[in-house]
Length: 238
Image 1 (spheres, rainbow, N blue to C red):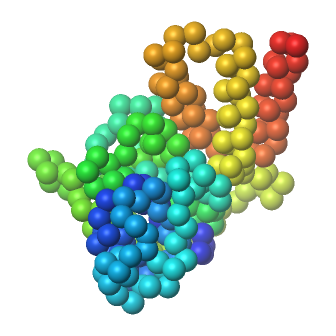
Image 2: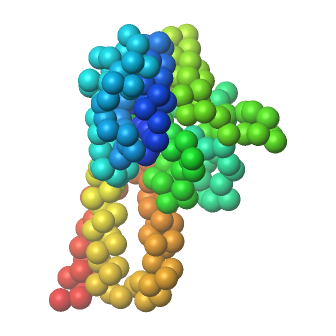
Image 3: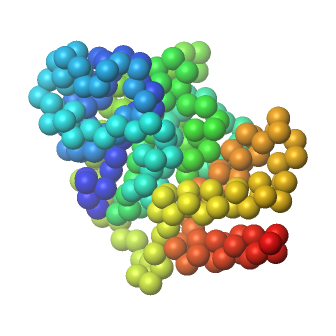
């Protein structure tokens, strides 16, 4: 297991201080990878660097993205943190369940904005949702505090655990980028077939389809098969 396989993604963070503190926490526990999606403050700025203290190198290497989908190109497993239980067909895990995650793969932890957290649409990209145990009457944790808890837990697991995952080397797991490409091709095919007849329901239908494909742990071969199926449907339209 490798610390370099782990990434932390901040989705639309609003406060410079939180971004800096998150960078500091990442370095505190031996990690290096931070991504920020559509931050509200100018990135970087003096306040971010000041609160990062000795983690300026993390800030300098931080990757900035305009949207969540593009940030997942090098992610195999996405874990979305949430203070709310989602009534969706998605795997919910606790901190103690993280020991079951295959950290030999590229794992990313997604954190929502301070004001609103993550929407169901954003969660639909995830393989799992993670809820940090807290006061049931006051569950909302500060962004940087949440990241500290997750980073410390994962750091300990990587340092102390020896997990032997036996899987055929011939089976290659599809990347989020490959799943995204296949899904977009699927959606364009459905669009041509006028599948989304009720425009008002289209966003929710796309969200549900995305959730299905992203949590299936598809292999590269399965992605090729599904793409061929959708391509065949397109030919039938011509």
